[in-house]
Length: 202
Length: 202
Image (cartoon, rainbow over all chains, first blue to last red; front, side, top):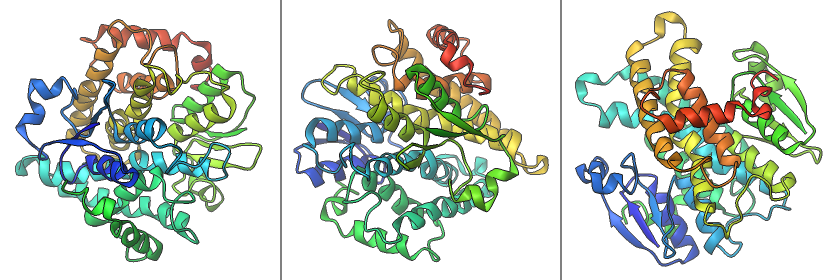
């Protein structure tokens, strides 16, 4: 498999996943904001010039990190990192797999756009403040789910790769986790995993 | 199954899905912005007071529309509306299932917040303008995928429920589809489906 990747992006999730599974992969590496990502050659691979994109040996190519996680697990996971559909954890697995993009990442995007991607004269601090406050609220549900749990849906799973990564990013961007001891412990637990440590800047 | 629902929200997707499958369901109905959705009783059901939420007969409860679509299809779909994992359409299915929340809905949220949910004195027209412009770009990839295709991933599927709904909403909010004939035809094709027509205001 080939992963189109940039450090500190959602592409980290895919490298993390492949390393948890021990799957071989190669990386095509960009930097966030790279002009090459907006060039026609790369737009033919991802129409909006984003990462991650996954290509597998069968010539299949897809983007959207949640889709890639589900694709890799279905094709090459051999049942690992996904609760069975008959399991009591299955509904929670799906919910927390989708929670990352549905709830946490929209305000993350706002913060990144308003503090990094927009030229300084077009930035609006009130958009940033509102987004950071919202991130704190989005992590309240994560905190509640983690009471009495080590991971979001039974054993460590694709849901932790998606929403765990989003949670770590939200905390880095200033989301309030001071009142969220379970989120704090969860972040420590995830960042201690070697498969994630080497994925941030692979 | 019980669907916590409000008209013109992501809950439409779940009613649409159940009607396509001919599954029985009941509705707990709210209006967008309803105070009851922020009351502690409903916060116990969805911590952020959002819809949809699905409860099934086994006592399982989950939110996130993408998760609910995948849950209902896995539990009750009997193979309908999902390409098999061995199918050439499977990767596209997953990508377009996730595209809705990953790409289209963040700017949709911005438009809804800035034109409806925020009090007038806190609204910012430049946020709206930027989001509507971005929506037009997000639909370019949908346009490209639909060239030569009737639906996003083979036969009509859960991916059309997710990204089809998001596409219709984006167009309603002013995303530019004048230069996107395939998107226009796709919207007509989806809105002609009786299962969707009655889901907007169920």
